[in-house]
Amino acid sequence: MNDDPALDSLWIACEAGAVPWPAGSHVLFLRARARQGLPVDRREALRCVQSFKPLADVLRRHGHAMAGDDERNFALTLLLPPRQRDEARALFAEAVRRTIDGGIVLASQANNEGARSGESDLRELLGETSSLSKNHCRAYWGRVTAAARTSELMQRWSMLDAPRAIADGRFLSRPGVFSWERVDAGSALLAEHLPAGLAGRAADLGVGWGYLSAQLLAKNPGIVALDLYEAEARALQLAERNLADEGKRVALEFHWHDVAQGLSSRYDIIVSNPPFHVGRADLPELGRAFIMAAANALNPGGRLWMVANRHLAYEQTLAQHFADVRTVVVRDGFKVIEANKAGA
Image 1 (spheres, rainbow, N blue to C red):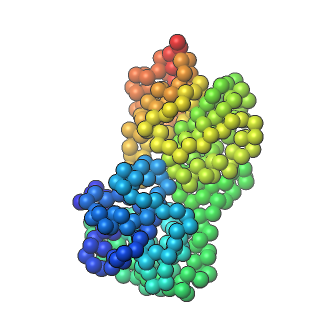
Image 2 (cartoon, one colour):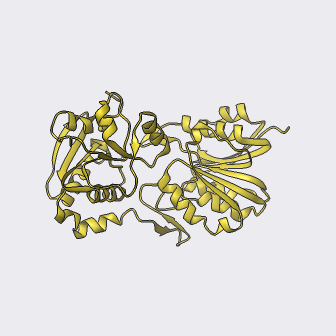
Image 3 (cartoon, rainbow, N blue to C red):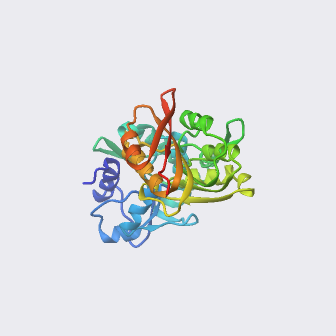
């Protein structure tokens, strides 16, 4: 078994025969995650969709094919819904849209990640569901009907993932991306303390929907190019739209990239509000990986400006990779740090 109970429970529903596997046809897998030991025929049948770059990379290493946005008419669609309910409902609608009449939508969630409400939502959309419980998770499924596909509910849920205006209309966001309803307090604190006069080539590591990059450019007209790195494609698409006007005067490049794997370009300035968790689990190693990636990508004399939760002990990693490190401000549970790379 993998250390992924929701994924295991989803496959148990297929392997136990509760949900029939369609012979000789492709199977769509939304928010797919790779499973070790999957039979070759089932692995080759899957057409996967995964917007989070580290997980997409793992799928490709396991030999999975990725589905195009226009692929549909699947007899079986698998889904690992996210915790955010509007985002999950939009995915249920996408699954129904891409599944044939009489086909099955099969989902799986941990009990403490919304399994009960997830099954309730799928039942509301399809009219009837079945389920099994395993590993503190619930796998649940239902058959797609023409009535479900054309329902008013289906149309309404399909729109729940649409970008919407936030922050007094300045930015677009969408359910499920980091700090999707408001400007993150840590990013706002970092933006407040960014100096003016930064110049040269810059990068934003973990750009999200683009707030910090917009503030960096507004304060620093001397920046001539900005590379924006983000692992979640759904957020990166928003950043491209939110920074469209800035792209008219500064060279912008948007990278769907796992920063923890390092960077291939060199910069004079890097800003970052690095992630430190996956799902609900703290993973401070992510933040340390961002710091090391920044240190390796900065030119001699380059500067890193970052914000982190106050309790995260990044100082040792910073001291190992930078010549000078100072805490600029500590407030509201966050700390803003400037770190300078040694000169040539």
